[in-house]
Image (cartoon, rainbow, N blue to C red; front, side, top):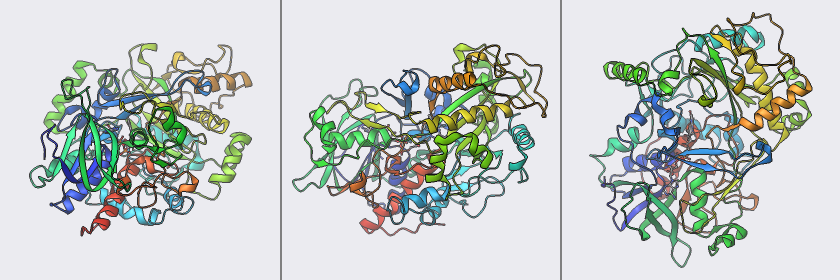
Length: 616
Ligand SMILES: Cc1cc2nc3c(=O)[nH]c(=O)nc-3n(C[C@H](O)[C@H](O)[C@H](O)COP(=O)(O)OP(=O)(O)OC[C@H]3O[C@@H](n4cnc5c(N)ncnc54)[C@H](O)[C@@H]3O)c2cc1C
């Protein structure tokens, strides 16, 4: 493998962006064909054996102010967000989001991928085609894994090293409160692509044998150091645009050194050739930008930044999707085991954890504080309460897909929220996210040359009332679970809706313990509902699941790539990352980014005539 800035003139395959999917493509192809010369150009730094990437519980450091392992994209201010801008951090390092993420192991519904195949007209992308690839990616170390799970893949999935005081109690409380969804075993698998509506513990992308994060570089790239000298990765590189010959065939990329990581690097733009293929894999924010700087996109966008149009492809940068998330914190008992000290950089707690980690490779750093949850789908009476705005969405999207949940609801054994607004103590947090938000957004470049320039970004969060209704329902529903949790000690008013102090819904700031199970559910007046909606608009957050901005669908329907991942209108150029997702998935998106990488590797291997046995 190359040293950080040594780049040859030519490779067989140049991969622009070394995130999840890019590293899967590179690692799989390099392993399959030792003669294939592959170059990954990645904007961020390397990650090899860096504790911030390897030790799971250190992940909040990537989101701290000043972090260089994520790039934060700030949206236009939006009335739907109470006038504020949304900030969406994306992974910026070798491994991309997979090396900084929360490691929640969640898989899509089978019908999500089946929709990719049928609704969006992509043969070969249905669940029956992707399940063998999902299996190939993972080793499922959780007891009781069914046939959709892998047994010998490179990325390990486990329950992590420690179970905190919120995992079993959440499941027990929720099942007692909601008996209609109880009756299934506590350890039931809700990540088999079909099972939903069960409260259960939540697995993690953590190797239970080593206690380390299951990211792609440490499992598919770094291990090839000795055996695959033809696999090169170079970090701290901004890919500006793709280069083409006269027949619109991609010949390579033009790049600059990212000044953040090479402050003394050369300023001029350089090029490198990819003689067989160029693969753009820069994520849902980066990939449309590379296409637009290459002259592939909507006329108006390109004219606005002075880029000459090569291909008229108005779908580039459109169709932006994410999940909309609320984090709702609660006070926890002093004796509860939580991650607050570690997450908020209490040196004593971290030192103790590191000592433990170095001795055992496990507790308590081999955990992500995401304890348990449910992929929640309403019954008829709940559906009625979600109101007419959502009913329309239900009728058109959900009703015939019984594997599609509407919300994810779960529990974190830590404060997730603005720590400056509340005292230092122990917390737990309920998280709720909308699985298929209705509203769409976009991301476009604002500068024709400068890769660091901010983007024209509209996330679409809460622009549809149906999305507001679902999310605010999630607040109410999860609050009933939270206040019955054994370690519940109150509701920090600063991080809850501004209900009138005289309202029945007003935050209970301090409690001696949980409320009794038969306590009536909180009633919300119209005024309370308005306060709750304002809260949702003021606090709704990204779930870090950006998707869809180079959608794989027919060109005439706004598609950017075909089902072989080829960019329309040119040759020798593919996009392979989460940006190709034509429709949303009911899951945290690492698993889907991985399977896109796997599928891309299969397609490329087929086209290059590389013999490779895949699928277990
Ligand atoms: C903070 C955070 C928490 C998350 N938590 C979870 C979770 O718990 N579970 C889960 O399933 N999913 C989670 N995700 C989502 C998951 O990690 C992403 O969906 C996944 O990383 C997307 O993969 P990708 O290959 O599409 O892009 P990425 O992994 O984002 O990779 C794109 C890469 O391209 C690089 N790049 C961009 N532009 C350029 C350019 N011009 N030149 C060179 N390189 C460029 C970027 O630096 C990046 O490394 C999280 C993501 C984040 C950011």
